[in-house]
Image (cartoon, rainbow over the protein chains, first blue to last red):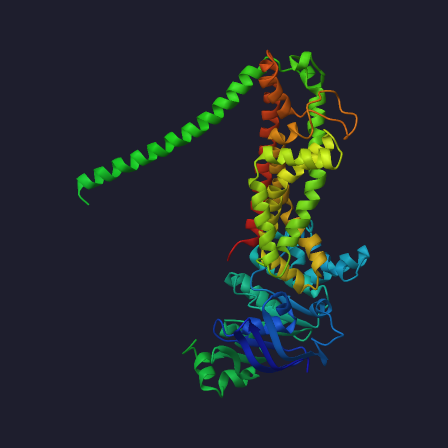
Length: 253
Length: 290
Protein backbone atom coordinates (compact mmCIF):
# COMPACT_ATOMS: atom_id res chain seq x y z
CA UNK A 1 0.00 0.00 0.00
CA UNK A 2 1.59 3.26 -1.12
CA UNK A 3 -0.48 5.90 0.60
CA UNK A 4 -2.63 5.33 3.61
CA UNK A 5 -4.68 8.03 5.29
CA UNK A 6 -6.31 7.41 8.63
CA UNK A 7 -9.06 9.74 9.83
CA UNK A 8 -7.47 12.59 7.91
CA UNK A 9 -9.02 15.94 8.71
CA UNK A 10 -8.25 19.37 7.25
CA UNK A 11 -9.63 22.56 8.64
CA UNK A 12 -9.09 26.24 7.90
CA UNK A 13 -9.62 28.21 11.05
CA UNK A 14 -12.97 27.03 12.32
CA UNK A 15 -14.31 25.73 9.01
CA UNK A 16 -13.78 22.05 8.36
CA UNK A 17 -12.83 21.13 4.79
CA UNK A 18 -12.25 17.41 5.21
CA UNK A 19 -13.32 15.13 8.05
CA UNK A 20 -12.36 11.61 8.89
CA UNK A 21 -11.04 10.62 5.48
CA UNK A 22 -9.60 7.12 5.46
CA UNK A 23 -8.27 5.96 2.12
CA UNK A 24 -5.76 3.46 0.82
CA UNK A 25 -4.00 4.06 -2.45
CA UNK A 26 -2.25 1.18 -4.16
CA UNK A 27 1.22 1.43 -5.64
CA UNK A 28 1.33 2.16 -9.36
CA UNK A 29 -2.41 2.62 -9.68
CA UNK A 30 -4.51 5.62 -10.61
CA UNK A 31 -6.97 6.69 -7.95
CA UNK A 32 -9.56 9.25 -8.99
CA UNK A 33 -11.10 11.60 -6.45
CA UNK A 34 -14.45 12.90 -7.64
CA UNK A 35 -17.25 14.95 -6.14
CA UNK A 36 -18.95 18.32 -6.45
CA UNK A 37 -17.11 21.63 -5.96
CA UNK A 38 -16.20 22.57 -2.41
CA UNK A 39 -16.29 19.07 -0.99
CA UNK A 40 -12.65 19.06 0.15
CA UNK A 41 -11.04 17.10 -2.70
CA UNK A 42 -8.24 19.59 -3.24
CA UNK A 43 -7.69 20.06 0.49
CA UNK A 44 -7.38 16.29 0.87
CA UNK A 45 -4.81 16.21 -1.93
CA UNK A 46 -2.88 19.15 -0.48
CA UNK A 47 -2.62 17.40 2.87
CA UNK A 48 -0.83 14.46 1.24
CA UNK A 49 2.31 16.45 0.40
CA UNK A 50 1.90 18.94 3.20
CA UNK A 51 1.08 21.86 0.95
CA UNK A 52 -1.36 22.65 3.74
CA UNK A 53 1.70 23.77 5.76
CA UNK A 54 1.85 26.84 3.53
CA UNK A 55 -1.61 28.04 4.47
CA UNK A 56 -1.38 29.98 7.73
CA UNK A 57 -4.67 28.86 9.26
CA UNK A 58 -4.78 25.31 7.91
CA UNK A 59 -4.73 22.53 10.46
CA UNK A 60 -4.37 18.84 9.64
CA UNK A 61 -5.41 16.00 11.93
CA UNK A 62 -5.16 12.25 11.57
CA UNK A 63 -2.35 10.26 10.01
CA UNK A 64 -0.88 9.99 6.54
CA UNK A 65 1.70 7.36 5.75
CA UNK A 66 3.51 7.05 2.46
CA UNK A 67 5.42 3.81 1.97
CA UNK A 68 4.91 3.16 5.67
CA UNK A 69 6.47 6.45 6.81
CA UNK A 70 4.39 9.01 8.67
CA UNK A 71 4.69 12.22 6.64
CA UNK A 72 4.34 14.31 9.78
CA UNK A 73 6.95 12.22 11.59
CA UNK A 74 10.04 13.82 13.05
CA UNK A 75 12.36 12.39 10.42
CA UNK A 76 10.47 13.70 7.42
CA UNK A 77 10.96 17.19 6.02
CA UNK A 78 8.29 18.71 3.78
CA UNK A 79 10.90 19.45 1.11
CA UNK A 80 11.96 15.81 0.79
CA UNK A 81 8.33 14.76 0.94
CA UNK A 82 7.40 17.05 -1.94
CA UNK A 83 10.29 15.77 -4.01
CA UNK A 84 8.91 12.25 -3.57
CA UNK A 85 5.30 13.35 -3.96
CA UNK A 86 5.01 15.61 -7.00
CA UNK A 87 2.05 17.88 -7.58
CA UNK A 88 0.39 19.19 -10.74
CA UNK A 89 -2.04 22.06 -10.43
CA UNK A 90 -5.21 22.94 -12.29
CA UNK A 91 -3.63 25.96 -13.90
CA UNK A 92 -0.31 25.27 -15.63
CA UNK A 93 2.36 27.01 -13.57
CA UNK A 94 5.60 27.19 -15.53
CA UNK A 95 8.01 29.70 -14.04
CA UNK A 96 8.75 32.81 -16.14
CA UNK A 97 12.07 31.46 -17.35
CA UNK A 98 13.42 29.21 -20.07
CA UNK A 99 12.03 25.73 -20.70
CA UNK A 100 15.38 24.22 -19.75
CA UNK A 101 15.63 26.17 -16.52
CA UNK A 102 12.07 25.27 -15.57
CA UNK A 103 13.14 21.64 -15.45
CA UNK A 104 16.64 22.06 -14.07
CA UNK A 105 15.88 24.56 -11.31
CA UNK A 106 14.51 22.03 -8.84
CA UNK A 107 17.03 19.37 -9.94
CA UNK A 108 19.89 21.68 -8.98
CA UNK A 109 18.18 22.47 -5.71
CA UNK A 110 18.06 18.79 -4.89
CA UNK A 111 21.75 18.37 -5.56
CA UNK A 112 22.18 17.46 -9.24
CA UNK A 113 25.08 19.60 -10.45
CA UNK A 114 26.73 17.89 -13.44
CA UNK A 115 25.76 19.38 -16.74
CA UNK A 116 25.60 16.07 -18.56
CA UNK A 117 23.26 14.56 -15.99
CA UNK A 118 21.06 17.64 -16.01
CA UNK A 119 20.82 17.63 -19.80
CA UNK A 120 20.13 13.91 -19.92
CA UNK A 121 17.34 14.20 -17.36
CA UNK A 122 15.86 17.16 -19.21
CA UNK A 123 15.69 15.20 -22.45
CA UNK A 124 14.35 12.09 -20.75
CA UNK A 125 11.46 13.81 -18.99
CA UNK A 126 10.58 15.94 -22.00
CA UNK A 127 10.41 12.74 -24.04
CA UNK A 128 8.30 11.16 -21.28
CA UNK A 129 5.67 13.86 -21.64
CA UNK A 130 5.88 13.94 -25.43
CA UNK A 131 7.22 17.48 -25.53
CA UNK A 132 10.77 16.82 -26.72
CA UNK A 133 10.07 16.93 -30.45
CA UNK A 134 8.08 20.13 -30.02
CA UNK A 135 10.66 22.06 -28.00
CA UNK A 136 14.09 20.42 -28.46
CA UNK A 137 15.29 23.23 -30.72
CA UNK A 138 14.14 26.02 -28.39
CA UNK A 139 14.96 24.98 -24.85
CA UNK A 140 16.17 28.52 -24.18
CA UNK A 141 12.80 30.01 -25.10
CA UNK A 142 10.52 31.26 -22.35
CA UNK A 143 8.18 28.60 -21.04
CA UNK A 144 5.42 31.20 -21.14
CA UNK A 145 5.49 31.08 -24.93
CA UNK A 146 4.21 27.51 -24.88
CA UNK A 147 0.52 26.78 -25.31
CA UNK A 148 -1.56 25.90 -22.25
CA UNK A 149 -1.40 22.19 -22.95
CA UNK A 150 2.33 22.31 -23.56
CA UNK A 151 2.79 24.27 -20.35
CA UNK A 152 0.90 21.64 -18.40
CA UNK A 153 3.02 18.86 -19.89
CA UNK A 154 6.14 20.89 -19.07
CA UNK A 155 4.93 21.08 -15.46
CA UNK A 156 4.52 17.31 -15.45
CA UNK A 157 8.01 16.89 -16.92
CA UNK A 158 9.34 19.21 -14.23
CA UNK A 159 7.74 17.07 -11.54
CA UNK A 160 8.89 13.80 -13.15
CA UNK A 161 12.49 15.06 -13.28
CA UNK A 162 12.66 14.72 -9.50
CA UNK A 163 11.81 11.01 -9.84
CA UNK A 164 8.84 11.09 -7.51
CA UNK A 165 7.03 7.97 -6.38
CA UNK A 166 3.66 9.66 -6.24
CA UNK A 167 2.00 12.26 -8.47
CA UNK A 168 -0.87 14.33 -7.15
CA UNK A 169 -2.89 15.82 -9.99
CA UNK A 170 -5.36 18.51 -9.01
CA UNK A 171 -7.76 18.81 -11.96
CA UNK A 172 -4.85 18.80 -14.41
CA UNK A 173 -7.06 19.05 -17.51
CA UNK A 174 -9.82 21.40 -16.50
CA UNK A 175 -8.06 24.59 -17.66
CA UNK A 176 -7.16 23.08 -21.04
CA UNK A 177 -8.99 22.87 -24.35
CA UNK A 178 -10.35 19.42 -25.34
CA UNK A 179 -7.40 18.46 -27.55
CA UNK A 180 -4.75 19.50 -25.02
CA UNK A 181 -6.82 17.83 -22.32
CA UNK A 182 -6.85 14.59 -24.32
CA UNK A 183 -3.05 14.70 -24.65
CA UNK A 184 -2.55 15.19 -20.93
CA UNK A 185 -4.99 12.40 -20.21
CA UNK A 186 -3.15 10.08 -22.61
CA UNK A 187 0.07 10.98 -20.84
CA UNK A 188 -1.41 10.09 -17.46
CA UNK A 189 -2.48 6.75 -18.94
CA UNK A 190 1.07 6.12 -20.22
CA UNK A 191 2.52 6.83 -16.80
CA UNK A 192 0.26 4.26 -15.16
CA UNK A 193 2.30 1.64 -13.39
CA UNK A 194 5.41 3.82 -13.14
CA UNK A 195 3.95 6.23 -10.63
CA UNK A 196 1.26 6.08 -8.02
CA UNK A 197 -1.22 8.75 -9.08
CA UNK A 198 -4.09 10.50 -7.39
CA UNK A 199 -6.18 12.64 -9.68
CA UNK A 200 -8.86 15.08 -8.60
CA UNK A 201 -11.31 15.56 -11.43
CA UNK A 202 -14.75 17.01 -12.09
CA UNK A 203 -14.97 15.00 -15.25
CA UNK A 204 -16.68 11.71 -14.41
CA UNK A 205 -16.06 10.35 -17.90
CA UNK A 206 -12.39 11.02 -17.45
CA UNK A 207 -12.41 9.33 -14.06
CA UNK A 208 -14.09 6.33 -15.64
CA UNK A 209 -11.51 6.20 -18.43
CA UNK A 210 -8.48 6.60 -16.19
CA UNK A 211 -9.09 5.29 -12.73
CA UNK A 212 -8.34 1.94 -11.17
CA UNK A 213 -9.85 3.13 -7.93
CA UNK A 214 -12.34 5.85 -7.17
CA UNK A 215 -13.17 7.82 -4.05
CA UNK A 216 -16.31 9.96 -4.02
CA UNK A 217 -16.25 13.03 -1.78
CA UNK A 218 -19.40 14.74 -0.57
CA UNK A 219 -20.34 17.46 1.88
CA UNK A 220 -22.00 16.06 5.00
CA UNK A 221 -22.72 18.28 8.01
CA UNK A 222 -20.64 21.09 6.54
CA UNK A 223 -17.50 19.05 5.91
CA UNK A 224 -16.09 16.97 3.09
CA UNK A 225 -16.21 13.24 3.69
CA UNK A 226 -15.58 10.15 1.58
CA UNK A 227 -18.99 8.57 0.93
CA UNK A 228 -17.90 5.84 -1.45
CA UNK A 229 -14.64 4.22 -2.42
CA UNK A 230 -13.37 1.12 -4.12
CA UNK A 231 -12.34 -0.35 -7.47
CA UNK A 232 -13.52 1.88 -10.32
CA UNK A 233 -15.74 -0.71 -11.97
CA UNK A 234 -17.51 -1.53 -8.75
CA UNK A 235 -18.00 2.12 -7.72
CA UNK A 236 -19.29 3.18 -11.11
CA UNK A 237 -21.49 0.14 -11.76
CA UNK A 238 -22.77 -0.69 -8.30
CA UNK A 239 -22.28 2.20 -5.87
CA UNK A 240 -23.49 1.43 -2.36
CA UNK A 241 -24.13 4.95 -1.15
CA UNK A 242 -27.36 6.35 -2.63
CA UNK A 243 -25.98 9.92 -2.91
CA UNK A 244 -22.89 8.63 -4.69
CA UNK A 245 -25.08 6.53 -6.94
CA UNK A 246 -27.18 9.55 -7.89
CA UNK A 247 -24.08 11.69 -8.45
CA UNK A 248 -22.29 9.11 -10.58
CA UNK A 249 -25.46 8.60 -12.61
CA UNK A 250 -25.45 12.33 -13.30
CA UNK A 251 -28.61 13.01 -11.36
CA UNK A 252 -27.09 15.17 -8.68
CA UNK A 253 -24.03 17.35 -8.08
CA UNK B 1 -37.05 56.73 -27.59
CA UNK B 2 -38.46 59.70 -29.39
CA UNK B 3 -36.31 61.66 -31.83
CA UNK B 4 -36.24 64.59 -29.44
CA UNK B 5 -34.82 62.65 -26.48
CA UNK B 6 -32.40 60.95 -28.83
CA UNK B 7 -31.15 64.32 -30.01
CA UNK B 8 -30.75 65.57 -26.42
CA UNK B 9 -28.86 62.42 -25.49
CA UNK B 10 -26.54 62.80 -28.44
CA UNK B 11 -25.85 66.46 -27.59
CA UNK B 12 -25.09 65.46 -24.03
CA UNK B 13 -22.69 62.77 -25.23
CA UNK B 14 -20.87 65.27 -27.37
CA UNK B 15 -20.72 67.85 -24.58
CA UNK B 16 -19.22 65.32 -22.18
CA UNK B 17 -16.66 64.25 -24.74
CA UNK B 18 -15.75 67.87 -25.45
CA UNK B 19 -15.34 68.59 -21.75
CA UNK B 20 -13.06 65.62 -21.23
CA UNK B 21 -11.00 66.68 -24.23
CA UNK B 22 -10.70 70.21 -22.88
CA UNK B 23 -9.36 69.00 -19.55
CA UNK B 24 -6.91 66.67 -21.28
CA UNK B 25 -5.69 69.48 -23.52
CA UNK B 26 -5.19 71.78 -20.52
CA UNK B 27 -3.10 69.16 -18.73
CA UNK B 28 -1.07 68.34 -21.81
CA UNK B 29 -0.76 72.04 -22.60
CA UNK B 30 0.70 72.75 -19.17
CA UNK B 31 3.30 70.02 -19.59
CA UNK B 32 4.05 71.19 -23.13
CA UNK B 33 4.36 74.78 -22.01
CA UNK B 34 6.85 73.90 -19.29
CA UNK B 35 8.89 71.75 -21.63
CA UNK B 36 8.92 74.25 -24.47
CA UNK B 37 9.65 77.15 -22.11
CA UNK B 38 12.56 75.37 -20.48
CA UNK B 39 14.00 74.03 -23.69
CA UNK B 40 13.61 77.22 -25.75
CA UNK B 41 15.17 79.39 -23.06
CA UNK B 42 17.84 76.86 -22.26
CA UNK B 43 18.73 75.85 -25.80
CA UNK B 44 21.09 78.80 -26.33
CA UNK B 45 23.60 77.55 -23.82
CA UNK B 46 23.39 73.94 -25.04
CA UNK B 47 26.76 72.55 -26.00
CA UNK B 48 28.86 69.56 -25.21
CA UNK B 49 31.33 71.72 -23.31
CA UNK B 50 28.49 72.88 -21.04
CA UNK B 51 28.19 69.31 -19.80
CA UNK B 52 31.86 69.02 -18.84
CA UNK B 53 33.19 72.52 -18.06
CA UNK B 54 33.51 73.96 -14.58
CA UNK B 55 31.07 76.73 -13.69
CA UNK B 56 32.57 80.26 -13.73
CA UNK B 57 31.48 83.57 -12.28
CA UNK B 58 29.12 81.97 -9.74
CA UNK B 59 27.56 79.91 -12.50
CA UNK B 60 26.83 82.74 -14.95
CA UNK B 61 29.34 81.25 -17.35
CA UNK B 62 31.10 77.98 -17.90
CA UNK B 63 29.40 74.61 -17.57
CA UNK B 64 28.05 72.18 -15.03
CA UNK B 65 30.61 69.33 -15.18
CA UNK B 66 31.25 69.09 -11.41
CA UNK B 67 27.55 69.52 -10.74
CA UNK B 68 26.65 66.55 -12.91
CA UNK B 69 29.34 64.53 -11.15
CA UNK B 70 28.03 65.57 -7.71
CA UNK B 71 24.51 64.70 -8.80
CA UNK B 72 25.54 61.22 -9.83
CA UNK B 73 27.57 60.71 -6.65
CA UNK B 74 24.59 61.70 -4.50
CA UNK B 75 22.37 59.35 -6.50
CA UNK B 76 24.94 56.56 -6.12
CA UNK B 77 24.98 56.95 -2.33
CA UNK B 78 21.18 57.15 -2.23
CA UNK B 79 20.66 53.97 -4.19
CA UNK B 80 23.54 52.03 -2.68
CA UNK B 81 21.68 52.44 0.60
CA UNK B 82 18.02 52.45 -0.42
CA UNK B 83 17.99 49.54 -2.89
CA UNK B 84 19.15 46.85 -0.44
CA UNK B 85 17.08 48.37 2.38
CA UNK B 86 13.90 48.55 0.34
CA UNK B 87 14.42 45.07 -1.06
CA UNK B 88 14.89 43.61 2.39
CA UNK B 89 11.90 45.49 3.82
CA UNK B 90 9.65 44.54 0.92
CA UNK B 91 10.62 40.88 1.30
CA UNK B 92 9.95 41.04 5.02
CA UNK B 93 6.54 42.55 4.34
CA UNK B 94 5.44 40.18 1.56
CA UNK B 95 7.11 36.82 2.06
CA UNK B 96 5.47 35.85 5.27
CA UNK B 97 2.51 33.70 6.02
CA UNK B 98 0.39 36.55 7.29
CA UNK B 99 0.75 39.67 5.15
CA UNK B 100 -1.68 41.63 7.30
CA UNK B 101 0.06 40.96 10.63
CA UNK B 102 0.16 43.83 13.10
CA UNK B 103 3.85 44.60 12.74
CA UNK B 104 3.62 44.61 8.94
CA UNK B 105 0.70 47.01 9.11
CA UNK B 106 2.69 49.18 11.49
CA UNK B 107 5.68 49.29 9.15
CA UNK B 108 3.44 50.20 6.21
CA UNK B 109 1.77 52.96 8.21
CA UNK B 110 5.16 54.38 9.22
CA UNK B 111 6.26 54.34 5.58
CA UNK B 112 3.12 56.22 4.56
CA UNK B 113 3.87 58.85 7.18
CA UNK B 114 7.48 59.05 6.04
CA UNK B 115 6.29 59.49 2.46
CA UNK B 116 4.12 62.40 3.53
CA UNK B 117 6.92 64.29 5.33
CA UNK B 118 7.65 67.51 3.40
CA UNK B 119 11.11 67.35 1.90
CA UNK B 120 12.17 70.58 3.60
CA UNK B 121 11.50 68.92 6.97
CA UNK B 122 13.46 65.88 5.89
CA UNK B 123 16.28 68.22 4.87
CA UNK B 124 16.36 69.79 8.34
CA UNK B 125 16.35 66.33 9.87
CA UNK B 126 19.20 65.22 7.60
CA UNK B 127 21.17 68.30 8.56
CA UNK B 128 20.63 67.76 12.28
CA UNK B 129 21.26 64.00 12.18
CA UNK B 130 23.79 63.22 9.45
CA UNK B 131 25.62 66.57 9.18
CA UNK B 132 25.72 67.55 12.84
CA UNK B 133 25.02 64.58 15.11
CA UNK B 134 27.02 62.09 13.04
CA UNK B 135 29.59 64.74 12.13
CA UNK B 136 29.44 64.31 8.36
CA UNK B 137 29.13 68.04 7.73
CA UNK B 138 27.79 69.29 4.41
CA UNK B 139 28.75 66.36 2.25
CA UNK B 140 27.65 64.19 -0.63
CA UNK B 141 27.40 61.33 1.86
CA UNK B 142 25.00 63.20 4.14
CA UNK B 143 22.96 64.35 1.13
CA UNK B 144 22.75 60.86 -0.33
CA UNK B 145 21.72 59.32 2.99
CA UNK B 146 19.01 61.91 3.61
CA UNK B 147 17.76 61.44 0.08
CA UNK B 148 17.70 57.69 0.72
CA UNK B 149 15.30 58.33 3.62
CA UNK B 150 13.12 60.26 1.23
CA UNK B 151 12.93 57.67 -1.57
CA UNK B 152 12.66 54.66 0.75
CA UNK B 153 8.84 54.73 1.06
CA UNK B 154 8.17 54.83 -2.67
CA UNK B 155 10.83 52.22 -3.38
CA UNK B 156 9.61 49.86 -0.68
CA UNK B 157 6.04 50.25 -1.89
CA UNK B 158 6.89 49.51 -5.53
CA UNK B 159 9.13 46.59 -4.58
CA UNK B 160 6.44 45.22 -2.30
CA UNK B 161 3.84 45.56 -5.03
CA UNK B 162 6.19 43.91 -7.51
CA UNK B 163 6.62 40.92 -5.20
CA UNK B 164 2.95 40.76 -4.31
CA UNK B 165 2.07 40.82 -8.01
CA UNK B 166 3.99 37.59 -8.59
CA UNK B 167 1.21 35.02 -8.91
CA UNK B 168 0.78 32.83 -5.85
CA UNK B 169 0.86 29.84 -8.18
CA UNK B 170 4.60 30.33 -8.52
CA UNK B 171 5.00 30.01 -4.77
CA UNK B 172 2.84 26.90 -4.68
CA UNK B 173 4.54 25.36 -7.70
CA UNK B 174 7.97 26.03 -6.20
CA UNK B 175 6.92 24.50 -2.90
CA UNK B 176 5.44 21.56 -4.81
CA UNK B 177 8.88 20.92 -6.29
CA UNK B 178 10.40 20.82 -2.83
CA UNK B 179 12.15 24.18 -3.12
CA UNK B 180 12.75 25.79 0.24
CA UNK B 181 11.73 29.33 1.07
CA UNK B 182 15.09 30.93 0.29
CA UNK B 183 15.50 29.27 -3.11
CA UNK B 184 11.93 30.08 -4.00
CA UNK B 185 12.59 33.72 -3.19
CA UNK B 186 15.90 34.07 -5.00
CA UNK B 187 15.37 31.71 -7.91
CA UNK B 188 11.71 32.19 -8.69
CA UNK B 189 10.06 35.21 -7.07
CA UNK B 190 12.77 37.86 -7.39
CA UNK B 191 13.51 37.08 -11.06
CA UNK B 192 9.79 37.20 -11.79
CA UNK B 193 9.44 40.53 -10.00
CA UNK B 194 12.68 42.03 -11.32
CA UNK B 195 11.27 44.22 -14.13
CA UNK B 196 8.67 45.82 -11.87
CA UNK B 197 11.26 46.32 -9.14
CA UNK B 198 13.61 47.95 -11.66
CA UNK B 199 10.79 50.28 -12.66
CA UNK B 200 10.40 51.21 -8.98
CA UNK B 201 14.08 52.04 -8.73
CA UNK B 202 13.88 54.18 -11.84
CA UNK B 203 10.91 56.06 -10.40
CA UNK B 204 12.95 56.60 -7.25
CA UNK B 205 15.81 57.99 -9.32
CA UNK B 206 13.39 60.40 -10.93
CA UNK B 207 12.25 61.59 -7.52
CA UNK B 208 15.80 61.95 -6.26
CA UNK B 209 16.96 63.88 -9.33
CA UNK B 210 14.18 66.39 -8.89
CA UNK B 211 14.82 66.96 -5.18
CA UNK B 212 16.20 70.31 -4.03
CA UNK B 213 15.17 71.14 -0.49
CA UNK B 214 16.68 68.03 1.10
CA UNK B 215 20.04 68.63 -0.53
CA UNK B 216 20.43 72.33 0.21
CA UNK B 217 20.70 71.47 3.90
CA UNK B 218 22.78 68.34 3.57
CA UNK B 219 24.94 68.16 0.43
CA UNK B 220 25.44 71.90 0.30
CA UNK B 221 26.28 74.43 -2.39
CA UNK B 222 29.95 73.93 -3.24
CA UNK B 223 30.49 73.94 -7.01
CA UNK B 224 34.00 72.48 -7.02
CA UNK B 225 34.61 69.03 -8.39
CA UNK B 226 34.14 66.75 -5.36
CA UNK B 227 37.18 64.72 -4.40
CA UNK B 228 35.44 62.31 -2.07
CA UNK B 229 32.02 61.57 -0.62
CA UNK B 230 32.97 63.66 2.41
CA UNK B 231 33.13 66.78 0.19
CA UNK B 232 30.20 69.06 -0.24
CA UNK B 233 28.75 68.96 -3.73
CA UNK B 234 26.05 70.87 -5.55
CA UNK B 235 23.45 68.85 -7.41
CA UNK B 236 21.64 70.07 -10.53
CA UNK B 237 18.37 71.02 -8.88
CA UNK B 238 20.20 73.07 -6.23
CA UNK B 239 22.26 74.69 -8.98
CA UNK B 240 19.07 75.72 -10.79
CA UNK B 241 17.59 77.07 -7.59
CA UNK B 242 20.72 79.03 -6.74
CA UNK B 243 21.12 80.51 -10.23
CA UNK B 244 17.50 81.51 -10.42
CA UNK B 245 17.14 82.95 -6.93
CA UNK B 246 20.55 84.15 -5.74
CA UNK B 247 22.62 84.99 -8.82
CA UNK B 248 21.53 88.06 -10.80
CA UNK B 249 21.97 87.27 -14.49
CA UNK B 250 22.11 83.56 -13.86
CA UNK B 251 18.75 82.61 -15.29
CA UNK B 252 20.00 81.69 -18.78
CA UNK B 253 22.37 79.15 -17.27
CA UNK B 254 19.61 78.02 -14.92
CA UNK B 255 17.42 77.24 -17.92
CA UNK B 256 20.19 75.37 -19.69
CA UNK B 257 20.78 73.28 -16.58
CA UNK B 258 17.05 72.71 -16.31
CA UNK B 259 17.03 71.49 -19.90
CA UNK B 260 19.70 68.92 -19.09
CA UNK B 261 17.71 67.83 -16.01
CA UNK B 262 14.43 67.59 -17.90
CA UNK B 263 16.01 65.56 -20.69
CA UNK B 264 17.48 63.20 -18.09
CA UNK B 265 14.11 62.84 -16.36
CA UNK B 266 12.33 62.18 -19.64
CA UNK B 267 14.87 59.51 -20.52
CA UNK B 268 14.45 57.92 -17.09
CA UNK B 269 10.67 57.99 -17.34
CA UNK B 270 10.78 56.39 -20.77
CA UNK B 271 12.92 53.61 -19.37
CA UNK B 272 10.51 53.18 -16.44
CA UNK B 273 7.49 52.93 -18.73
CA UNK B 274 9.26 50.39 -20.91
CA UNK B 275 10.19 48.32 -17.87
CA UNK B 276 6.68 48.48 -16.47
CA UNK B 277 5.27 47.37 -19.79
CA UNK B 278 7.71 44.49 -19.83
CA UNK B 279 6.70 43.61 -16.27
CA UNK B 280 3.01 43.84 -17.11
CA UNK B 281 3.52 41.63 -20.11
CA UNK B 282 5.32 39.05 -18.04
CA UNK B 283 2.71 38.95 -15.36
CA UNK B 284 -0.13 38.81 -17.84
CA UNK B 285 1.53 35.97 -19.68
CA UNK B 286 2.40 34.14 -16.47
CA UNK B 287 -0.55 34.79 -14.24
CA UNK B 288 -3.52 35.19 -16.52
CA UNK B 289 -6.80 34.16 -14.99
CA UNK B 290 -8.37 31.19 -16.68
